[in-house]
Length: 390
Ligand SMILES: [Zn+2]
Ligand SMILES: [Zn+2]
Image 1 (spheres, rainbow, N blue to C red):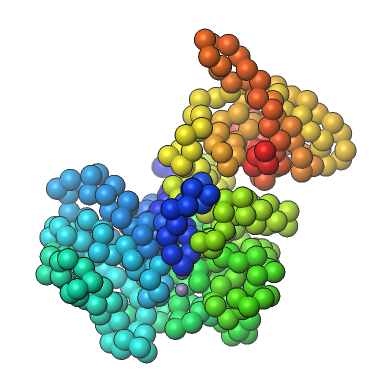
Image 2: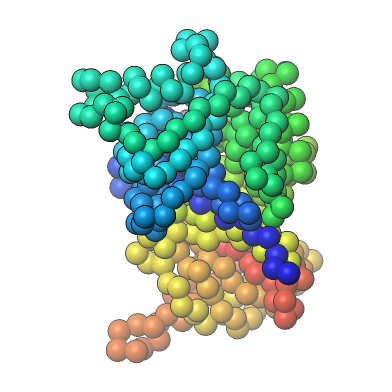
């Protein structure tokens, strides 16, 4: 029997407004949109930010004439979570069917999300009106505390602390549990408790990390966002396995997100900063979480395997020096196989042999620090993730 596997793809990870600044290119500038394919084939889209457009193009190309049925969860109605709607090609094809889930806003009343659609596409805001959207659309209201099934996947919701409201979603699939909790500010006792209930034991916990703890303590308090520190705190309390820092501030450059990620990784074992194109596989053999960084983001990515010399110091203070291979190399980091299963001290020296011009071998010296060790994987090798500091 094959192992159930779920695939989670990040199409938009930026908060508040899209960015095209080259300094934000590596993590990406599109606003929130995620896609989860559960082991039973159920397709779920989380939020309709500008990342939705690229997902739509991919689906339209992949599906051809095939009928598709998709479930779309919208956390709330701020621009950055709905702006992709008019640009999602599959909404214009009558063969497609969409089930929408969102909450009733006190500002919009009944059929809140349906009204958002109609208003967004009302003249003169958009060149064509709703009649051009031919796909079947069903709207379902959900409230914090609700629980329901889609296929064999259990969905649970909780209200989050955000101006005009927001919903967090927990999706339990046979391959693992994903919690999507963005646009949330800590500090409301009941809602903080609700978020912890929602996140209990999650395999992947995607959390709002828009601000640094310092920013959150300043004038941005009350704007409805969180920091990496709160994510780490919750992940520890509820035994979440992997934390994904999400909803990066539009003014945070890649370097700033790198720093936020580094802080998170100093305090929790498995942390990623969401980046556009990142794909996480759940339920792969051995129960590990696999995250693949986007190749399209980084022209420098090398899919081939490179021989490398890796040296560092184990946690016990013992130096080591090993010949090995580096795979999945990108600007953000790499996966390196090591024979060392013990924990390593944080700094690690990697000298990589890369094919230079005319087939010559060139050595590249990289400094990084260890982010994750999958001890006990096959053949006595441990996969070590490193993030390059320079
Ligand atoms: Zn937002
Ligand atoms: Zn918001």
